[in-house]
Length: 128
Image 1 (cartoon, rainbow, N blue to C red):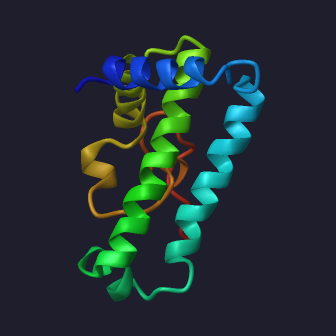
Image 2: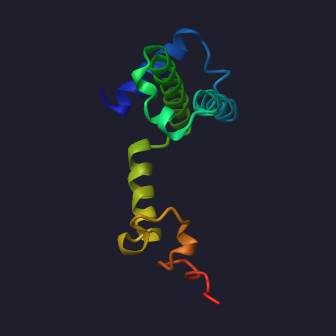
Image 3: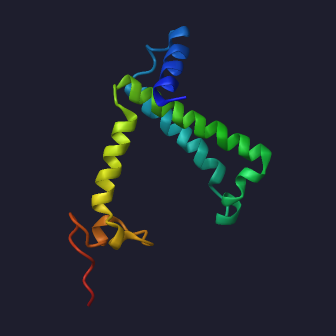
């Protein structure tokens, strides 16, 4: 199933219920934020090891899958309503990030691009 297929199914689901009137960009962003918050809540107090093993617990795995699906559904609806080609937007963003985070500067680093000394950054912090 493609992104277009998913968006079409969501569009049909919404249309059958006459919910288009409620699914404005603002409302979709707010709903998306809420669903991200619900996904965050699942992981909030877990240790890194517990978070890494969460899918081994069937009940928690089900909750994680449900919240990820909710996040994706609202994100795809938002993109559909705003006529954003999600795949093209992601490909463009990967290209921008590749320029900001050149492999030789970013490999193994969690630093923001402005601290890596790559193109567009002020350079690494001065050593003093």
